[in-house]
Length: 181
Image (cartoon, rainbow, N blue to C red; front, side, top):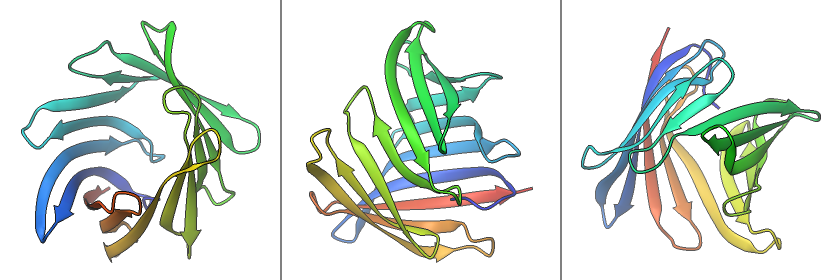
């Protein structure tokens, strides 16, 4: 849901409780012309690398400090779906998710077919994400996350977003700093 023309961005995720903010992770992203992530680097609050991604011509490489790299391939399917499968050594499948899109390009749901087998349902009002409902494979509620965009820039990018888990009541603040072409 980022506006067109973003060249790069920094995303900081904080856990907030009792008027205290604790940095959980920081992600630096560089985008392609069509809005896909070309390169990203995620570090924790101590500056340790969590994940690094690099877009190649036909796949994305996900690099982790403590395990083998994942090679993720995206395949478009009919009815506005895309399947993202990740492999180690380009042959052993590690995870797979199918993304379902609405006609306006927003995500309708994400179905995990490998790790958790959870399905995430995305809800929008006025083209703005306000809720994510997570269910397990037996359709039981795992969590419901309320989302509120507190501050936007002139291009419509949400600069400060508050996410509250209805199950754990944990509050996360996501701060985005975009740079445009």
